[in-house]
Structures are given as C-alpha cells and as structure tokens.
Amino acid sequence: YDPIESNNHDSDSVDVLPICDLITKVSVSENPVNKDDLVDWTIVVSNDGPDDAADVILSLSDLESLDLIVLNASDDSFDLEDYEWIIGNLDSGDNVSLIITTKVNKSDDTITVTANVETSTLESDYENNIDNESVLINPICDLIIDIEASNETVSYGALVDWTIVVSNDGPDDASNVSVSLSDLESLGLIVLNSSDDSFDLDNYEWLIGDLGSGDSVSLNISTKANRSNENVTVLADVETSTYESDKENNHDNDTLEILPICDISVTKIADKNPVYIDDVVNWIINVTNNGPDKASEVIVNGSFPESLEFIIYELTKGELESITDDDGNVVELIWNVGDLESNESALLVISSKALEEGEVVNSVSANSSTTDMNQSNNFDSAIIDVISNESGEDNPDNPEVPENPENPDSPDNPENDSYEDYYDEFPWDDYFPDDLFKNNDDKALDRNSDSKSDGNHIKSPKKQIDISKKKTGNPFALVILSMLALFSLATRKN
Image (tube, rainbow, N blue to C red; front, side, top):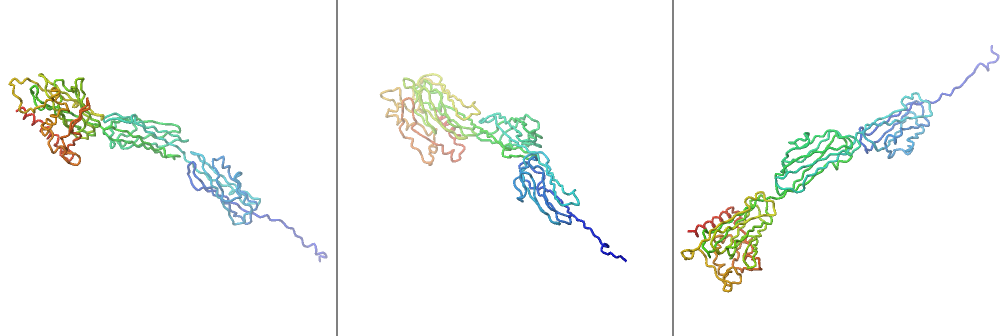
C-alpha cells in the first residue's frame, strides 16, 4: 500500500530543434566564352531537410576580382556590391533561384565562381552548402593586315612589288594564322618570287602559324604586269583559329593602274622617182596604231626640205600645221592626228614642187602621249632624185602648177585665185577614193572649200575625214590605200 501516490509520477521535456538540409547549385550559361561575352550565372538553393530553414543567406565570390562585371540580378534582394543574397526563410522541400548576368572582362584564363549558403537552422549535412562553377575564357587577338604596291601606276611589263604586313594588336597570341590573296594570274600579274618560302606560289596562300601579341610579320611578292590599260586590285585576307575582337581589319586591298600601251608606226613614200625640176611630187604619209590600246595625242612631224616648195595637202584625220621661215617658206610640218584607236590609221598626202636638182630626203617621225612599246617603226624616210629635164619636154603625168602673178615663186599662196583650179585638178582620188570621204552620217564630204592661212600655220581645206571603210568593218582599207598609192606611182613612172 502506497499511502502517497502523488509522487509516483514524474516527467521532463526537451526541446527538439528543427533540422534542415540546404543544397546549393551553381551553373553557367556558356562555356567556353570570349572576352566581352555576356554570361548568366544561375544559383539554386533548395531545402532537402524535414524542417524549415531560417535566416538563409547566400554569398558569392568577389566577382569584380574575377573580372566579371555584374550587370543585373533577377532578385532585388541580391546585393550587387557585397555579392550577398538575402533569402530569409526556406520551407522544407522548397527551393529558390537567382540569375546574375555578368560581362567577361578578360581573356585567355579560367575563372571559378563559388557560392556558399548559410542558415541559423541546424543542418544535417553541411557538405552540400558550397558549390562552384568554372568557365574557360578563350584567348583573344586582333589581327591587322595591310597590303601595298610599290607603284601606283606602271606600264605593261613593269615589275611591281607587293608588301603584305600582318600584325597582332590583341592581348593574346594568335594561332594558325594564314593569309590568302587574290588569284594574281587571273589579274594579269606574273609572280616571280616571294621573300618567304611559306608562301604558296600556286594557291597564293601564306601560312604564318602562331603570331604573338604585339608581333608582326611581312611578306614581299615580286610580280610582273602582263596586261595594259587596266586597274588591278589585289585583295588580302588574314584568318586565325583564335577569337578576334575586331574582324573588320582582317581585309585590305591595293589598286595598281596599268597604263595603256600602243605601237605607232609611220610610213612615207613619194609617188614618183626620179623627178624633174618644177615637177610636182606627192608624199603619202600613213600613221597606224597597231594597238593593243588607244593611242592618245598622236603627232607626226618632220622638217620640210628646202629644195621643195609646199603646195597643198589632204588628210583623213586631225589638222596640219606648218612652220615657215622669214621668207614664208615652209620648213617644218606638224600633223596633229589626235587619238587613234587600236588598229586605226590616218593618211596625209602632201603635194610639193621640186625646185632644184639633187637628192631629196624627206623624213617623218610619229609619237604619242601613250607609251609606245615599239619605237623602231616610229620613223621613216622617202628619198627622191630631182634631175634636170634635158629633153625639155613636160612630164605628161605632172599637173601644171598655176603661178601667182604677184609672186610666181609661191604657187601655194592661198590668195592666188588660180589655187582653187589647181586644187580641183589635183589627183586626190589616187589616194582618197570617193567612198572613203565619209563623215559619221555616211555622207560624202565637200572637198571644194577654201584653204585658209593664219601666217605660219596652214589649215586644211578638209577639216575632218573619217575612213568609213574601216568603221564599217572593212579590214583592207589600209591595204587598198597603199595599193592605190603604189599603183599611182607605177603609172606615173610608166
């Protein structure tokens, strides 16, 4: 029997603290990345414990020291300066996430971002409170290429050096660097040699390999211009397997102007030989541009022999000027032909009177402002023998030259009224058939205009004559003219 049962019972209490298990996970949006790339860092914190977690705080590495510029965060509770995320309470089984957007501010490195979560609640496992993620940042370079020709303007056959300089202006080394050029052969450039054996002469590629930061290399290529009258542009491109901050300067070009060339040839013949004193002798001058390009500002000139007296002339192109001495005698003739297209010819016939006995050498030269690749045919001479007429008989083939009553020794005086009669009687058709006297409208031109003189310069009564046979596609116009001249010569000699 227990008389006092009240003390048969007793109890005590203990506070059982809540327990949680916080887990942190860090992930990155891209890997590897380049300098100046935008990278998102995602941090997820979850509570895998049976109880709620209180006063949860997550702290990150010093992102600025890692050369990561923080742009924004998905949660305003993230402190952008201290890199702390105040989460607060996190119920059992719940999770929260944060996205931080950063900009990469370095290159050629690996950076690691660490996240650590803490709570005032007891945790069953502290090992998973910390996590990190690493990202590889590629090296970065900035290749710059420059190409320059040794000359801006050259002629056909000239040697031209092309200098290519490649430099790396980036912070890191560049790998697998190569340069490709335009197809030089298709541009009319013959490659003679290069300063570096690594340049492929067939494919026009230069294999450089690695190029350190701040370094530069150069290549010199010697070429020969194999075209004319053309602008040649050579392109140069540089490539690398290393990431580049600026690819705009990976391309460059330079343009070379190759001047036109021509081959001017001139011939001069006399329509008779020998010639009697006081006979009229005609000089046929033909100037031709054998191409391949247009000849500009063609001029044919030559001294006029003192033993001849200038009478009249006819031409198919340009203007004829004469220079006289103090006595009014023609001493030099300048034929301003103008431009001649490739394979175009112009003809000039000069009528003169033989004044004295002896050998007469009548020379002529032609030139152009366009480069003439063959100057051996720019000169020609015609030689005649002037003899006395022992028989005293007139040459039946020789037209009569009218005399000027005021000055019998100057039958070429344009003030002489009988000059037009002689002009009409001159055998122009021997040298200029009627169907060659055409203008651009294919109409016959009037040959009966007055000759005019302005002192030392005699202007042609025929202002401008085009050889329409040539323009309509007849390649034998020049041959026909030459045959006509020779036929006339043979006829007069007979």
